[in-house]
Image (cartoon, rainbow, N blue to C red; front, side, top):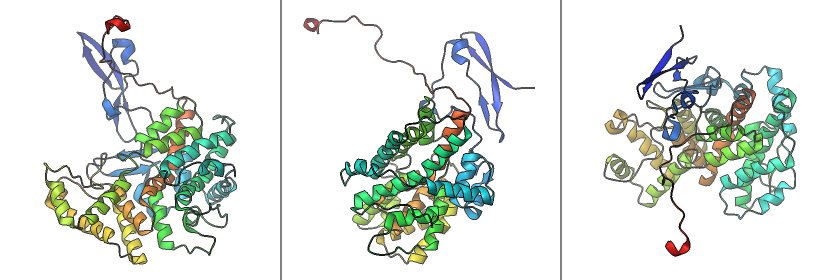
Length: 427
């Protein structure tokens, strides 16, 4: 027998169906609420509203669970590659060896970016934020690929997906090359996806770039951990923009802009800015831990706790090990990273943080890794975007294939009621 929820309003009772997900998540289907009652729900930030049904990602913040297509994030990070996980997230199943080889070959095929894109990137000032540049360049891909993708044509959808995966990585690294004054690099079809990221970023014409396998493994894990995260701000933005039947490039560009914010993808940048500020003011980690515990002090300890994970961030456990391996392998002696390690060690045993479950999250450890690799702080969110790309693609694809309606939230108007217009002499 199906469940229903009963709402009583102005003496009238209304029944609404209850939907139960495959992990026993419960939702009240209020699709007909306004038609039946004339009322709407008020839910700022949509914290209690489900915008869609999705079979991509399951997240349980209370229990610290994250799964892609039913696979535990711990297993995927340990046993799979980023492109393997990308294929899983986008197409629904882990690829066979042949499917993965074809996927990677097709990404390489479309990794070459039109030379005229250089004219666009040349128009940006050298000090432009890489995320602003990346959003613009991604949107510009629409001009070079004006054909509307037929979402019901499997071949066209696949081509759009591999084209996005190939070109986005190159454009993301070009934002760094532009700000650094380096010549722009091209994808090397003899290298893997993550290896290409490193050489696209750092290889110079003056000599070959040696890629450290420990670093590649850490980045591969980081990209996997960021691949999707349910209906967060940027993912919801991609689905919302795509619901108007805007193309994949335009929708991804909107997602990049949403990710840019410091409350979302910019969190790892905020972590390093905080650490640099502590270092600049004497480097006393204990002093800032005390400030964080003082409710009258406006200082906030960035990178601890999580808006969704109320217990611990399962991704942080995985990437902590990778961060330790990177720091050990590279032998980094950076006072800012020493402050980070001090904050981490203290917070993990301090009763104030432990009792409130304010553990270091994935943004804290990803910032440490990026800093150790010599990646500038303003590039951190760009790397987040590279990792999140398959999730955005999968969510856009699912939304279009499910023929979801255009997103159109309601509001409660709180302005003036009807007023008479006054001519100038009466104002």
